[in-house]
Length: 113
DNA sequence: ACCATGACGGTGT
DNA sequence: GACACCGCCATGG
Image (cartoon, rainbow, N blue to C red; front, side, top):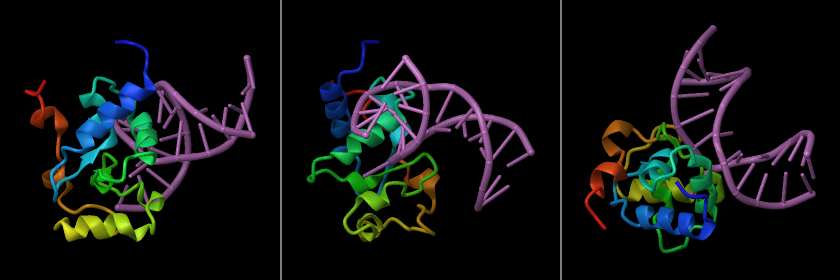
């Protein structure tokens, strides 16, 4: 495991986010683990703050399916709105049927590259 | 160098 | 389920 390279790390995060299908969502921890940096969930969150506009940032929530980053959207209700427009059911700032909606990058992109 | 602050996560109560 | 802790690690003051 090499030392953290901000540039490469952010890019790796965005690569995963870009692959999350509509109607599904992943978590910070799952993404960190998928790119080879288990335990760097906070860094993934940090990367999302400067997430490119063309990526589905609203499809990244915490390990419990809670929209922990909604306040970083403009307006804050935008995140929830985007998810619902894709058919994701929400219950009090949290994704319903989380176990079913959760998209695990480890199982979906294990073959690429 | 010390300390506070997070789009976090796991455990225990 | 809600809450409190604690471990985690880069950033900024």
